[in-house]
Length: 478
Image (cartoon, rainbow, N blue to C red; front, side, top):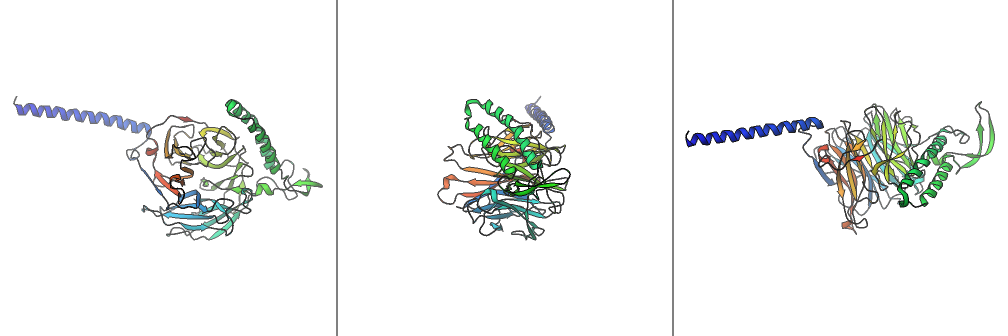
């Protein structure tokens, strides 16, 4: 055999080895893709973020985001000197046109002059109308909030939508109160029952935490439950009225409760959820009651009904996910006693009634979170994954409807002490038609203070970005 033949044989063997190695690796790779239900396109990591507008000195907070039918993204937030005490606060917005890489300059979406306008949400209803919902704080206290909304059918052109209708959303939970709150009122009864159910659960949670928890929380519970029942029963508005018995007869009673407190003060934070392409569920909460409620409409806002309240000390700002069997799961901010965890509750009747509120295993420092159900059934949760501070903003992915959260990445993480760290909070999350996950959130850059240091930040990414690398598992069973 000639030297040339020997060289050709070596080359042939080397190329054969490379082919075998490639085929072997390819089989393993395809097996891995089959096991994860992914495709080669799904494994391409996509991530991009940017500030929606340059840093400002004003307070900018509580953003929301929606995708329009032409592929544009529309976002909104509130902006002004402060929050409920600042009468110059207005609802601002910006648009990211399809195919563009930069957001438009901010424009005004809503403003009730001389009153704070807070916490907008945007969504498209089954009639393809754009909704902007928010609340106006009437007397500079959260308890005086009044829900408002605007509708638009002309929102695809550049700039702000053209609004065709504006109305107040008047909340009327519970039974008839024409002559005062009657015995057995369903709203009062539900609050009473849930307080009775929650007390032993809370005491057990506090007991498990042992010496970490001061006795003050037990007295706080007693004060909170008494105040809560007083508001639910209308004891803040005692007037002459009439009691009705089962036969329909009535008699005068001098001290009757009226339902002003439970009809005012409801607030928005997270987007509406639409089920069966018909029912719109708007999550609400009350800083007065320190619990949550759902507003439901089956006719695109002509008439409304209201769920049983979701009662626990400080369970606020629900975000909704949906299981394959139709069960809704609410994840709520924890503004109450330890342990500081996202609250959860579930509904099997399309949002009308809700299970007793309990803690999840997901940490929460008393800050807003949001969740979205992806088209493949996975859940994506965006939240501050700490018990104290807003210096860490995480994205967690559940592939089993919240039983576990096996993948977590951080949109923002500042390891410095809390008094020096930047702050990231109040996320809003949706999935766009191209499959990407779209998030907006409050961004406060402490390194730029004093001076302009606040903006709303935008990020878009896919599941592949969340899934690398895989962190320790967080478990939770809704």
